[in-house]
Image (cartoon, helix red, strand yellow):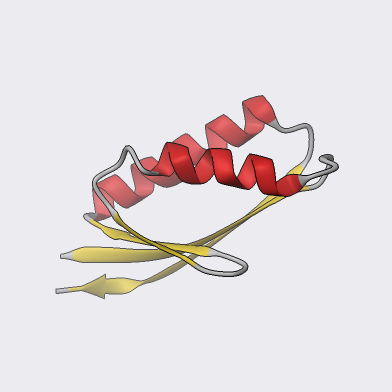
Length: 80
């Protein structure tokens, strides 16, 4: 079974948010998930446990490295 999550990260206190977004995308590459980078969001596909681990880790990373941010997560029902 695979879970699909669409993630949108918006750093609010950065002059150039693209750098922070790129850093998170590079961090995301360490996980065993499929990654589809879109214009405004990134989709990850993987085992449910891994997807939720990624979401938690990204949130923790953003909380440590960004003063203010928005993190939108949309989960689609699992695929068999």
